[in-house]
Image 1 (cartoon, rainbow, N blue to C red):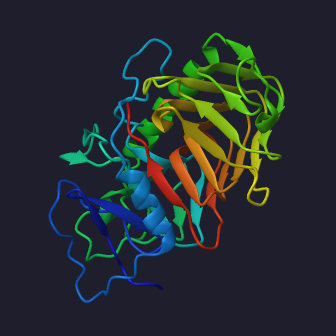
Image 2 (image 1 turned 90 degrees about the horizontal axis):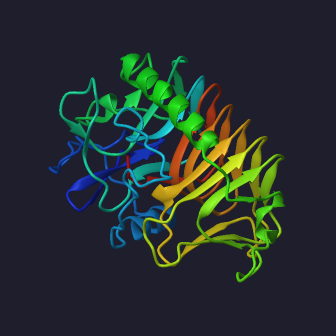
Length: 312
């Protein structure tokens, strides 16, 4: 088992799940005892580069945005049955993310919680006693994890509301099949402007990349209503990824998925509301993986860099 390590950024801490718990909030050094820090890997450096960009505002209560609420917004990973991880997965928070007060938790917490309800199993992570806040940041019964079932259950209740809200938004356009081949007049193939996109079938990102164009508005909103499943598949260096341009912000991207999501490209962004399961194979995931009834699985051997983008 690798050593414990908490990476400090701007007075806050990034959690290294799979090797350490989620970090302390509000600054100050985490007590690592005799544990030796591990070297900063390329994956962690990649996440650091994302987190240290200039903060961009989320669309707080803007017409068309999805309000997550204080019970749900701090969760980066939430599942109905189990959460399982294999590799060196990092769970952190975006630059400028506001420290929030979560009902039922004393004090403020950072945007990097992991939880499961009504299930109680989390595997592949551990919360060593030398980390002053780690055991309070992973909400699962048993072991060193926080057994408070009300916190993740309240988050799941809020997820149901967010899921239904996203599903009810009036669509502004329809999409189908491979989103990297989507065609909108005035935009290159595979590029979508802000809007509410409805699909009555499975969606994918495979042949090329999907680009979301924020039109130089950091509060631009993208909602994808997927009746069935979503699957992204890495296609060498040419496809399977998401690209955000012209101030498109991952905290304003929502994926409402009727069944399950398998995110296998190199990069994926947005708040994923899945009715069933979520599998994260993306090396960089800037968003939230929120599953209503089934598991969140992170099977990638080298781990994933998961960044809660903030917003509420």
